[in-house]
Length: 304
Image (cartoon, rainbow, N blue to C red; front, side, top):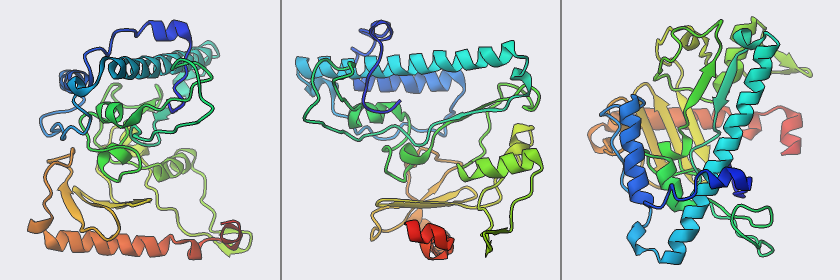
C-alpha cells in the first residue's frame, strides 16, 4: 500500500479501534509477535524509537492517527484478498502448482508526507489524500531503523515470499539469503535456461549484476557470492558477506554493521574495523563507476 490512503468503508470497519493503543504499544506487540512466530530471533534488537510519544498527542491527533492505520490495514486486507482471487483462478485452471509467485515490497515503509491543497473529506475516501507518515512508518518497520529513502535496513530491507509447489523445497522455510531486485532477472534466466545477450543494437551489453536465487528456492542456502550496493538520494550502502557499510549524507563517515550478529544495525563497528570499511568503500566506488550513466547504452544516455 502507498499513499493516498483510500479503502472501502466495509474494509475500514474491520479495523476500527484496533490501533487505539498507539505507536509504542503496537510496536512492542509487533516485535513480540515476530519473535513468537519465529520470523526473528534474539539477534534482531528493537531499534531506537523515532515515533512521537503517543501520550504527547492531543485527542484529535490520536483520532486522526488511528484512522490512518485503520485505512492502511484495510488496504492490505483488500490486496491480500485479491491476491487470493488470482491464486484461486490459477488453482481452478490447474496451473498453481507449477506457477512461481514472488511477492515483495519495493522498499521499507514510508515516512513521506504528501499534502495536496485540493484534498478534502474524511481520511480513507477518494477525495482525501493522506500519507501514513513517519510515526506509523517507524512502527511498520519494526524492528528496523528508519524508512524509505534511507539506506538503513528500514529503508531497503523488505521480506520476500515465494510460492511454487513444484519448485520450492521445504515449504514454509525461512531463508536468510540477502537478495536484491537485480537478482530476479538472473533467477528467471537461470530457471528458463535462457541465454543472456552479449550485444544489443550493435553494442556490447554490460554483464548483469544480479545473482540467481534459484538454488535458495530449491533448498540450497549457500549464502550470497556477489556484493550488493545501493545509492538513493543522500543514502549509500554496500554489503559484502556479513558486513554492511552505510552513510546517510555523501560527506558523512561510513558506518559499519555486522549484519549476521546485528541485523537491526544498532552497533556501529567502524572504529574497530577500519580495513573492512576501506575495502567496502573502495568496492562501492568501483561499482558506482562501473554502472554510471556514462557507461550506459547510447540510447539510454540520450534519453536520460
